[in-house]
Image 1 (cartoon, rainbow, N blue to C red):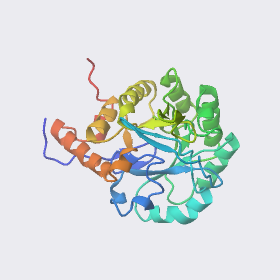
Image 2 (cartoon, rainbow, N blue to C red):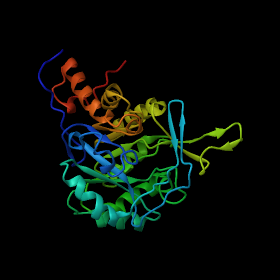
Image 3 (cartoon, rainbow, N blue to C red):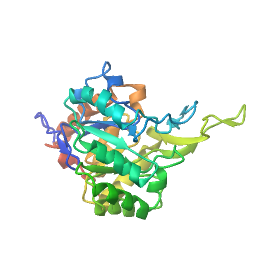
Length: 309
């Protein structure tokens, strides 16, 4: 049923009030300032900043990006400025934009994850922590914590015991079954989960017969992984009551709507930011238009509205 009334786009992502259900994904939007001349950041539902550990991290050697059919393979390796530099130099800018800031954190040990979380807890302008336990592009940390349910849960429990901020573990796609991981995060005290991270991938130059990336392998993102992400979001939504932040190949509004119908409370635009920096705002407008066209009064009604075959 089509309606002319403006739908209510607001959602709550595990304790993070968002004016609309569209965020930007970590690693694709810098620390916000990099995109400020290209779009109105204050219109976003949330900004998720590049991954931070305690100290600055240089990431992997170049080259670390390769464009492929249907997306991109990257092995940036969680390059970041470090938590102190972010608090001093980048967070004041984001506070001025009146937008929730989700800080992606990582470490090479459980203690480092917890230390980063503690340093950010209570800092004005930080709305939530996305715990990166699934990055395939670093040799230490990242995926080593998210490959097993037990280690992932223990890490979230350790952080939960030390901080009050909402916690959003970021789950890996390359596991046999996403449901026990999602349930373990909920049981460990997570306020929401985000999924999916990139899919392990590799690109070879057939003329030189050498890997294109200096790191050899990387993570595939973009529209090619979207149907995989939709399935995993749907599965996770059947297993938990906490909200889901969905990502993976959101190029236009229909991709975001598909995630929400599958069970996501909110979505994040990632690879598309490199193609058209205004993608997230187009997605916001497109979700509103879809809701008017189908008679949804609020974004909350859209979440999990999939109709059985």
